[in-house]
Amino acid sequence: MSQPSSAAPRILAVVVTFNRRDMVTRLVASLDGGRVVPDEIVVVDNASTDGTAEALAALETSTPLQVLALTENTGGAGGFHRGMETALTRDADLVWLMDDDGVPAEDCLELLLGHVADHDFLGPAVVDAERPDRLCFPIRLPGRSTVVRHLADVERAAEDGLVADVVIPFNGVLVTRELVERIGLPREEFFIWGDDVEYLWRAREAGARIATVVESRFLHPATDDLGTPLMFGLTTYNHSPSDLKHYCMCRNNVANLRAYAGPLGVLAFVAKTFWFYLFTRRDLGRLRMSLGAMLAGWRGDFTGHRKYLA
Image (cartoon, rainbow, N blue to C red; front, side, top):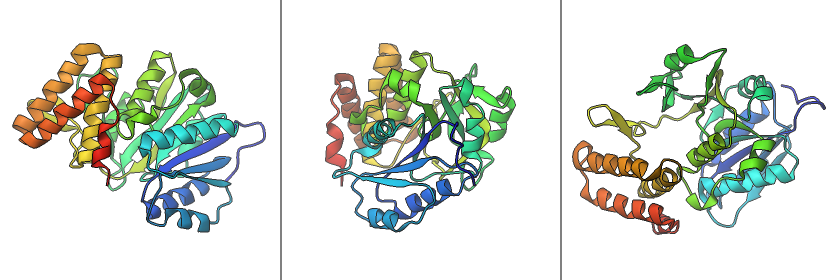
């Protein structure tokens, strides 16, 4: 393992965690053992109650580790907002962002750094930890009308090892300080779900140079309900069994679509939601919840998720 040289950019890894003690300690150990390691690791602990803070305090790492212990759960959005803000105050040139449930390959950061001179927002290929030949999150490749789910499809689409304008944000992505200063921090009021997509869309609007480095890998647990096919396979829907996640997904998706795609984008998402809970997985109770969440997103009300917090 090697630290960046004195002439290299200062890199801070930002990890957001909540009640995943074993996962986050595994992740920190992985970051500390990479072929190239960040200058500092910042873990934002969203008021965990499972001994996360004590477990992190007991870790012995060669990389400086700072734990920001929040007094309330601010969700992934609030955690990344606080973590990126802290990275800037600690003179980071590059911020390496990730949730607590993924693990970067040993050479993940090294491979991303090979392209940072020409990009503002770089990401690894995010693959299923149990089946690394499959993508963890289905993606739509540039110029394609369908989504792909296999790493081989991404490899075939790459040019010079890159897939332009595509990343899975906040899963091992590397963002430049200049971009953060230009477009600001993630929207903390989103709590969870959609804050990463909004940040990516905001970056695109600002002309950021975005790409996936296909050879770089970030392993993540499978998310089988994401990208569930509907409308005879013409499109997909991000169903979640969690009421909290689903409420935030519907609310934040409408807020994002209203801002970046306009009323027709919102209408298409509403139609997909009706189709999914009337035909694909009939659930009228979930449909009613969805309608309330989507109305809140249209109005810009980001308080409704609180009733689903444990």
